[in-house]
Length: 201
Image (cartoon, rainbow, N blue to C red; front, top):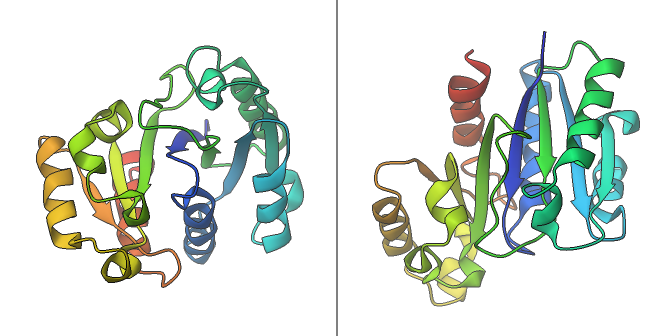
């Protein structure tokens, strides 16, 4: 069995690692075998955070150091991430899903389909309610758009319902889901979407 490979991209601070933490807990509860690859420029910061969380054995979490623009190793030359995913599959043949987290990047970030089968893009309300209107490739082209930190919208002057409506409008029918990783809301919907669209379960 070959594990499905999904990308998780988005700007710095949008909540990619927090989303992965929430997804790991949900996948564990339903028996999905998962591994994670993180990408940072010159550190293993996100990988170490996930290892400290204890939701996966540490050996199922690999770190790739991009050493340059974050999108280089997920789009222009994804060979480092491809090799890391191959190592995980060889070591853990029971894996069903490998999540590949991009380093924090801008709205132009996308994943090579040589690397992933499917990818999501994470934005958050703290970045401003005009993000959907900017129509970056990540917002427009991802298989799933996740709008995170819905809980803080009233505190940053964002009309969250309007932001979600604009996000869905610019995506022309592609799905967009709202989450609050801090509160755990919307996570079950993301998991259900992944099960249906990626794992076919």
